[in-house]
Length: 238
Ligand SMILES: Nc1nc2c(ncn2[C@H]2C[C@H](O)[C@@H](COP(=O)(O)OP(=O)(O)OP(=O)(O)O)O2)c(=O)[nH]1
Image 1 (cartoon, rainbow, N blue to C red):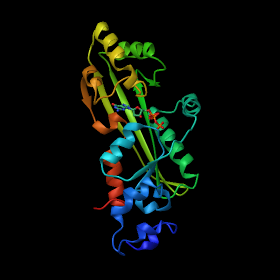
Image 2: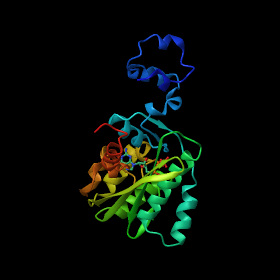
Image 3: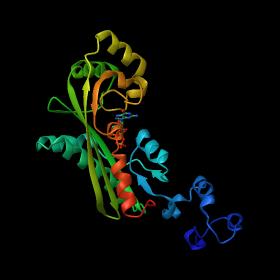
Image 4: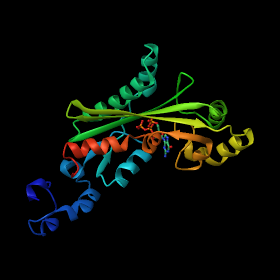
């Protein structure tokens, strides 16, 4: 890789290596905060504070940077609900708002915004504020179906270049009050940031009678579709 790809102020000690591939330096460069100076090193910037989204992307081998988008989700959601927007349009609009906010800061390369919406009984359910609300929600949702809609939007420069909304349909089992109370007491600290009050990869799976749809969509990111797009456009090797 040409040394011109590397930041001009790269400490000379790192320029000691020959003119060949610098990729073995990338962890070192990243640790020194050079990732932004070398956008080619970063496959994309994740405009999200979601731990699971960052984990899924990194586990898939992507080099990502994370930047909090800090959009007023509740205000956007309220405005869209006032216009009778569908849950998938709300998820898509929120994902786009997050990607756009970070992209407009001049972030180099691709910026990915995401949002997950839970649809139950014709309603868009927001995250529970406390464990009592979470217990109440699970009591309502047991023995019934709900859907998770995970939207992802990619910006390049000032334009959206890709979007997808993944949908998963889940049927909760008719869990007992005693189990739900114990479940919330055991898991509240872990599930407090997950819409729906569960993490499928943890004990949340014991709430379910059936899961139809993509596992990653349930976790909050249509990962397979995203990777297909990044491969198709050449960001990831074929
Ligand atoms: N680990 C895990 N997380 C889940 C699961 N289901 C939902 N989530 C997480 C994914 C997202 O982080 C969160 C959904 O809320 P949002 O889409 O608003 O994202 P969040 O507020 O976390 O971050 P962001 O708004 O993107 O900065 O719930 C699950 O089954 N497992």
